[in-house]
Image (cartoon, rainbow, N blue to C red; front, side, top):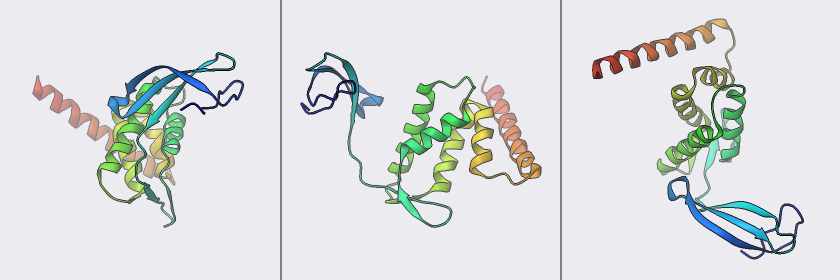
Length: 165
């Protein structure tokens, strides 16, 4: 791609310095150098997937946007020990799960459930934060119910791990 714009000087030409696979071979990471100013930058190339529509709670449809999931998880994991690599992995896993369904449309509820399932294994506080926005906890009783379910899952997982040893 000769006509990749430089993010620094906006020159419409760059050369590829290095290419390598990323995200398990689903993405190509390219290091580029601007032909005008010499600035080096990274681009990512991924296969263009068929359009996927998300059916929102109110029944409207919009195109799937992985950035919305990313922003939601970043917000939930703010000031928590969850790295960007882990967040990106969750987003990738969610996108792969919904695309593997083979459907053209998927509900936002299903996407939220996938995110929460993966986030619960990474950081409980981030999970609760995400769930509180996603499930729109209306009062303390609903919040407490979610906490009890989470504690029951945690207890079950601990028992399973103990029996494996």
